[in-house]
Length: 120
Image (cartoon, rainbow, N blue to C red; front, side, top):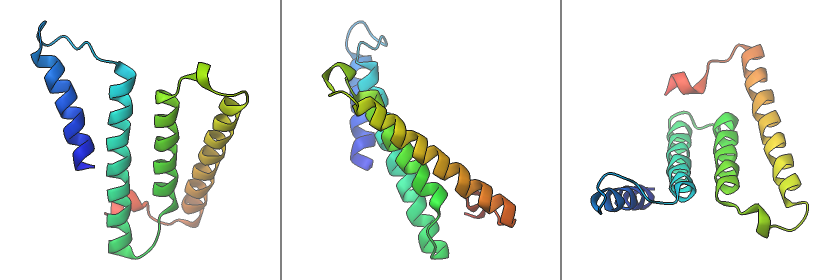
């Protein structure tokens, strides 16, 4: 995660220093993909922190990491190079992960359990 953050900062800093200064002439989708990679790393570290503190796996965090990973894949994909049906498969995965996240959150709320985000 540290290397991905450094790489993202390097790409942005290098482009901001080259003439014309402070005008970013980079591939925005590539930078956004790198940013999402850093976000995935942060979420994984947060999940590990919660696990080490409470010795339980929080499904919400797992679903969030998976959704961010799928979103990153969608951002960096070129749909013209994909075989037929791949986008439908990605949509089905996204729908399944979203539904799973919703059901886990709803069951936690119905049981009256505290939100793990506020405990840590």
